[in-house]
Image (cartoon, rainbow, N blue to C red; front, top):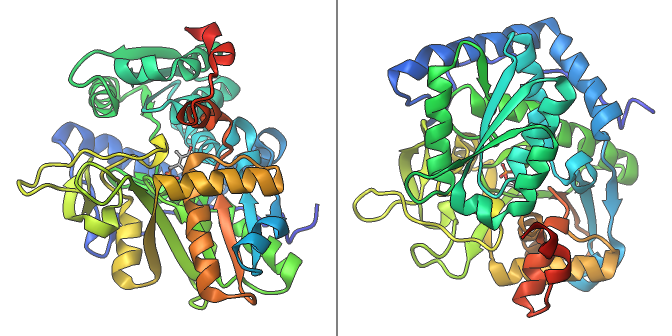
Amino acid sequence: MNNLTHPTFELDALVDDGRFGDFGGAFVPPPLVQPLQELAEAFSVAARNGELAQELTELFRNYAGRPTPLTEVPRYAAELGQCRIFLKREDLLHTGAHKLNNALGQALLAKKMGKGHVVAETGAGQHGVATATAAARLGLRCTIFMGAVDAARQQLNVVRMKMLGAEVIEVQSGNRTLKDAVDEALGYYVEHADHTFYLLGSAVGPHPYPSIVREFQKVISLESRAQILEQTGSLPDAVLACVGGGSNAIGAFHAYLPNEEVRLIGIEAGGRSLDPGEHAARFATGRPGIIHGMATVVLLDGNDQIQPTHSISAGLDYPGVGPQHAYLKASGRAEYGFATDGEALREFHRLARLEGIIPALESSHALAGAAQLAQELGPDATILVNLSGRGDKDVAQVADMQGVTTQATTGMFC
Ligand SMILES: *Cc1c(COP(=O)(O)O)cnc(C)c1O
């Protein structure tokens, strides 16, 4: 493998208190203060001595399948307007999405900290599966908290996590969805912090999680930057990524931050409309607030209560956003737009039909952003889209929406 497409992977120690301008920080109850400080300290020590990066690089290459390819999609681009479009293929990573980069990184860190047990919450089950996978590989006990309603909706992922050796706790409190799973998981962690590790799934939450998750996901742009230079001789005009909590996007942007000429564009879930409760476009209608331990941009109602959200894609369906994105938006370095459910669905089908790649519905939002940008920039542009995951998980849902029965494939788990 040559060094261009296999850049040396280094982790930067945490340099600050986790503030990104007015955003970030750690707004947590007293019992979490010390565990978070220990986590920050352990990460910085591991980053400085280089061992964590070395072991993670080995796992990335020989277990997870890194580097992922950078694929030009000429038939797709021709339909959008003749520009060049390249996809960073996180869909080809083991387990089918970028989430494994972070799960492996944090599981390794847990081991370094002498913690034999990882706990995590999961909504649709994607982060739970990535965590269970990393825990199995590294020989860690794994407990996943999942709302009982979500578990019923995502039976297949529950089965998958159990096959991977994880214990799945179906949470019966509250609405029995993600928020309740977070509460239960955090409660469990506070009580067992001496030997458990909380494995957080996106670039969100209190310091140091947003920075740690970025450090584990930045491998995406370290690779893509070298690959696009090799394939085209220059940097792209724009890099696009979908933004749920913001981990694939911050990973896709990181290496381009110093290159001001490269536009960085995050695409949020525009859902059915921008009416309250119908979308998760935080930058379109949100305002500064605090959620899950961080200061960021949040969808709030008139009484400062967190608004319900909707997206066709579970991974983008979250009322807050990673604090570094709030900062990149405020500073003007990155731009954020949104794509509706319908626009994402259109690009889901277009990429499948023209290139033989079925994208995750989340990633289809980034493609919809690229479709719009292609019109704007014209034929000379080069656009790089981070394809955060594959769409196999979404095939049944998309088929259902078209009235196609998928009972034969899902019936086994009913
Ligand atoms: C979870 C997920 C996302 C959203 O999470 P981020 O932290 O914003 O990256 C996007 N795409 C896929 C495929 C996912 O599984």
